[in-house]
Image (cartoon, rainbow, N blue to C red; front, side, top):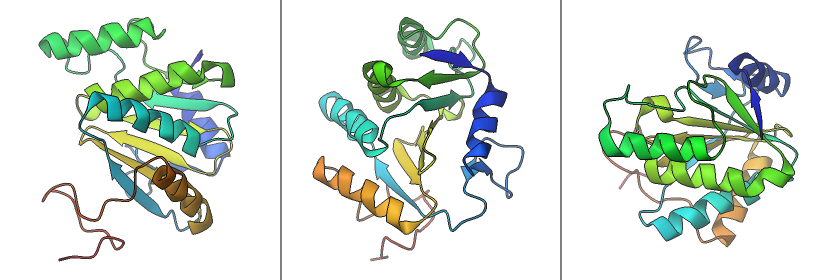
Length: 196
């Protein structure tokens, strides 16, 4: 695993045709600006065992494996040091994976780092704490990117429906079909989930 700057992360994403949303240019919200940017989301499973399998399924879904870049606004102490045991646990585990104290950049995982990547995605599923610990995942092929958000949802963005269909199929084969309802009342409706 390599440490890369936030500027390198966003520059690399931009070279793949992935950029900051024109609607939110000062945020870390990414889109495919030149295309339709079809998206889907999956809810994170509730149990630790399922979360482990779910994280591994995502690594399979975004392969072939070149490199995979991850960006988090606040790797350590995402609650500003006021999160108690949960924040301490998160910070210790992230450091054990090689994220140094006070790191404010991104991480680049190589093929031989697959287990560490799966572990970090699992930690995000199990302990993703708040908005500051939301995670962007951009593979070097640029055929998709992921957004692990603190509402226990993983979004996938693709440049077209063909790429998206392949990811949906991979997740379905792993036991994670698309949801048929919104996670809660705070979610905006999406066209692919029909209202009851």
